[in-house]
Length: 300
Image (cartoon, rainbow, N blue to C red; front, side, top):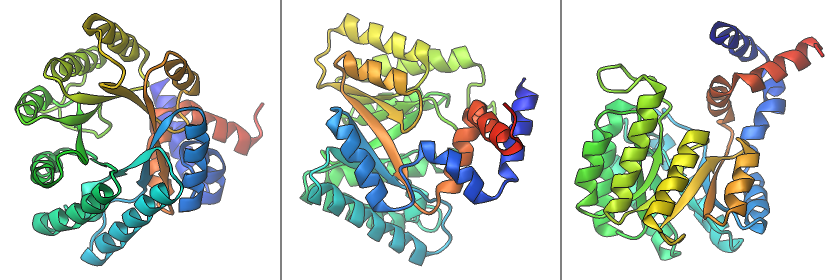
């Protein structure tokens, strides 16, 4: 079945982008900022928070990074002007980390400074392993300037994550905890699904034990159930954590978490660079790729 899924995803990647977009837009708000604003308003009406993200990564020039910074400014302005319950998520490489560490620090610091001036927050995303140390260092330096306005993402499938969290907890952390999506070598990443789940819950427990705020980012039923159990055991008030999910993924689970009274935040991506993001979502959920295939081939 995995081989069939791979074939289906490969087929979808051969289709014209406009055809893929008709189906992939389930996972993105749209191509424009106004699309994201509309989606966030709809979520807010359901008492669901949002994280807005301008899609794009792997930039190659400082000019591209500065343009991405201006887009981040526009998102922060839109959040303020529309009174949205939302914050901003950024990818460090999109803002220059793959070009120059000091340049990326200056660029991201400007974004966080603007967010802080609005009383808002920026989440620094975690990318693949060549950038792990650099991203943690960047987070620490920016947090020294704006301790209440910046957070980081850690990935449970990396073997180093517990050690990273223990070290960061000494300074007080604001986390998004996820399983991780990048393909990493077995030397540094757990490959067994149950081992990743165990590490996720172990790391979550350590974060909460040490008094950190955590965005519990998962669509995995056992992890949601495990988090529920852990939160009940610790008798945590609901302002000490939140659940986080991707836009368009497992909306029944989303609605249940929301109905259960937990704080919930949906990651809302948008932008012209929608294709690479959408292909990753299709690879994670080949069933959607199969829907596209059936529609294109008129199979019912």
